[in-house]
Length: 331
Image (cartoon, rainbow, N blue to C red; front, side, top):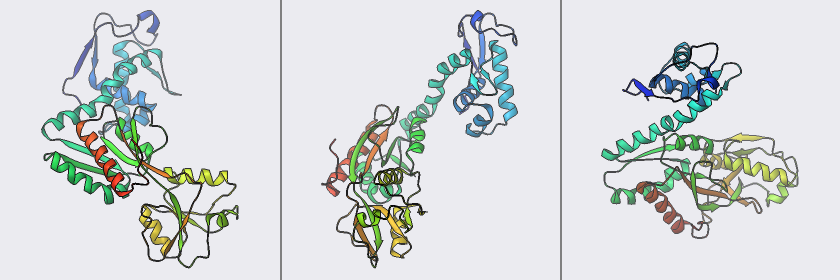
């Protein structure tokens, strides 16, 4: 985000000159005039660990030489070196400056959203595709009756790390997805429902129990599941390893629905989540996974929950209690 105010004047911002002065630049005297755009570029360089990495993350087009030149101009104005280029390392002066500008620039996106929300309220929700597609519409319908002017923005993802970044950078307000035991640093979390993991096998399969399968130690049949780095697959593979078995042949699917379709086609054994005990899927039989950790769905948000975020979380909680009374989590 570019700012319209081109200059920021800071008096006596840096620590005493005798600590920071280098032989490369003359020490400044009197007031130090720092260009806000230069400070913004330095913030990206410091955050991402170098100029080339920063260029890939800056949300508007700018070339590497321009970033290098403008950050160099900031160093010249301040009379200090802010970071070592290779390998990248912030100097004491750079660390001091970054600590000062980081909260400002990281808060801009959130502030922008709050300012826009004053006239055009919007709730930006991200999370697992299954949740947003099959379960959230009923909650949003109730919220629309309570907040008639509220708009909704939905974004699907399968990775907690990506969601964390969106929430911290103010690109999302709340997320509904699988969560761990503890909230990620800087975020708040609540658990909503825990669902058992199951294996899905073709109806014609002779497999009777997971124990029979794991007795192979090195399982020959292919496993179809979500991407290996997804939360549910990582935990399953770890607990499988603890039982002394490995599953080397993994087929990656982009959704749990796709897992079921491939299993029904007879292509593999599927790792899935049981959300309906009574469901009977054509061509598919469910094999329980006793002893494996369930998949816990929860909500994540940053800071003090706004009225709309609180309403969304409590709406999903009420939905979970009504739909899955045996699996809903206590508050």
